[in-house]
Amino acid sequence: FISSPLSFHLSEEHLAVQAAARDFARTELLPGVIDRDEHQIFPKEQIRKMGELGFMGMMVSEQYGGGGMDTISYVLAMEEISKIDASASVCMSVNNSLVCWGLENYGTEEQKQKYLTRLATGEIIGAFCLSEPEAGSDATSQRTTAVDMGDYYLLNGTKNWITNGSSASVYLVIAQTYPEKGHRGINALIVERDSPGFEVGKKENKLGIRGSDTHSLMFTDVKVPKENRIGEDGFGFKFAMQTLSGGRIGIASQALGIASGAYELAVEYAKQRQAFGKPIADHQAIQFKLADMATQIEAARLLCLKAAYLKDQHADFARAASMAKLYASQVAMDVTVEAVQVHGGYGYVKEYHVERLMRDAKITQIYEGTSEIQKIVIARDILK
Ligand code: CAA
Ligand code: FAD
Image 1 (cartoon, protein in one colour):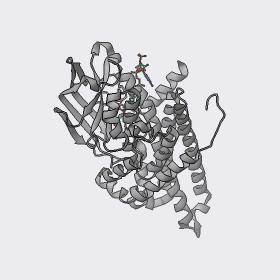
Image 2: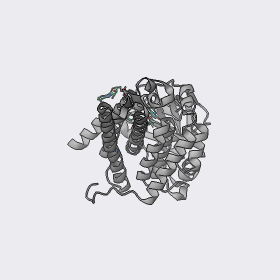
Image 3: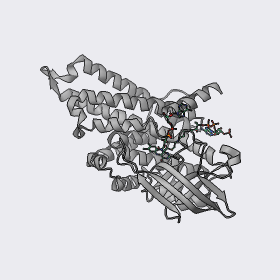
Image 4: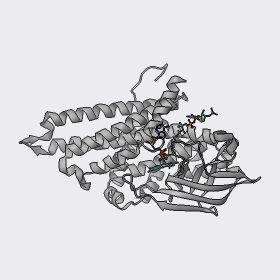
């Protein structure tokens, strides 16, 4: 809100997007969410419908088939989808804020026509491939190589933990071309699913977001045409960092949604569950939990909206995005644990949803930069 009046006004359009996302989550995502979590089933049909409704390319301009919406709309939709199904929302977040945003802002016109137009409508989905077995937080230590062979790059290496790993058709792959140049020698390449030498590895069996398909990916002498490089030669690491700043707003909003979903369930449950002759909501210990949860969620929401606002104003938003992710992910942890507590024993079984939300919350402190990495980003910005 720097150098502009504080405004808490959401437009009619914002409210309509929020209502549409809420309605979709309740009618299309809620049925089957427990089963998908238990059996690790990717919400394929639901993601297809999200594409039809415009949720897979919300911020992409209309000329490329997107919704032409602002980041605030995206935060509102991410919160609503994440209240019900964080496995669907991580797919949505990667496609919107990493893949589509990266391509629209740094891709060539040909790349946008060829890939973005289909990604923005959800006809196909994308994956963002930075992490490796030996390069997670330490993202400049890329071992995957993209050797310049004249009119193509020869790609070799392994990526780890890739969201949408087996469902994607297009992969943005970060790889080292000039090791002697360090992070300034890294490139970002668009790799198509059916490229010879590309292989999808094992699916991870996870604590949470179990409907999301997280895979390792192997590249063996994959030929990637030069025209599939994003940006100038050596721009790949900057591409990844700038794209991730926006991605962190998506994950912060996911954390916010996981927290607010658990909170809403806790409020409802506290009003109807009787103990000692009255609803547990009449016991002050439960009231104080609900008050703390509501306050933390409100603060997290404001941080998410502030980061989104700054991004929409084309202001520097990296610090705000990291703050939103750092704080909202902690809130997701705290609130979901308390929501299970409010539910007592019922909170510990699957039918009541809060145990799943508690398991889903943890990943928001890990991916798109751990909480420790967010603190590094924030501290460096303070001290620069
Ligand atoms: N925007 C633009 N450039 C940036 C930047 C930003 N936000 N942050 C850093 N850079 C640039 C720096 O300016 C520097 O370039 P120059 O030397 O040319 O100026 C270069 O990047 C290297 O920066 P540092 O020296 O600060 O690098 P570092 O090795 O100390 O690490 C880091 C920086 C912030 C820790 C970074 O490595 C990082 O963000 N790590 C976490 C990785 C991450 O978030 N992975 C997420 C994977 S995707 C994912 O997880 C998706 C999902 O789950 C759903
Ligand atoms: P490490 O970097 O080994 O960190 C281990 C611990 O050390 C952490 O607590 C970390 O905070 C701490 N640490 C490391 N360095 C420092 C430091 N300098 N100071 C203080 N503490 C430090 N990646 C992608 O590229 N694309 C994806 O789509 C994707 N999806 C994911 C989905 C899931 C379900 C998971 C689990 C991961 C996903 N990731 C993805 C990878 C994710 O971004 C990394 O796991 C994350 O960045 C951390 O890297 P790491 O696991 O190697 O942990």
